[in-house]
Length: 113
Image (cartoon, rainbow, N blue to C red; front, side):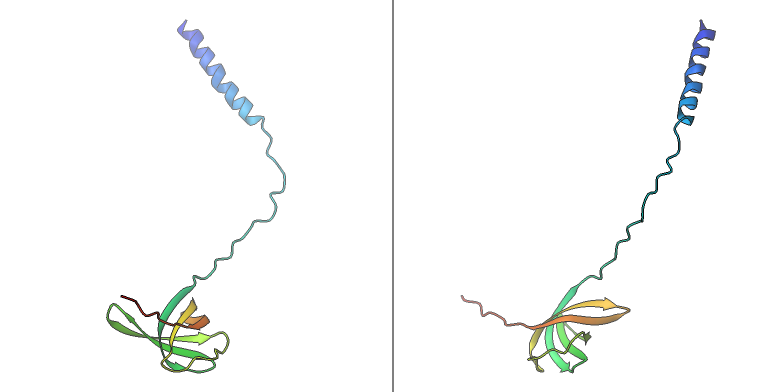
């Protein structure tokens, strides 16, 4: 009886190998692989304009009591912004250089009590 069970088990194992070997390898072309472009993260900074030119803008901003100066390269010249204006700058970092994509004036609302 034991010998018959061993033979039956051996036949099952060998038949699974035989059926697994019958599946043909598909030769269908998978097509081109899609590549995803990694977008640079857009960040923003708010501060007071210290220097401005057609190519760059420099602001001072306060973070947790510390004053920090940041300089940005401008994609296009900004108009209507002068020194001591409060601005919000949307920027990206490319090769260690900060590039401003949008510069806008900030108007602070007065709080009512």
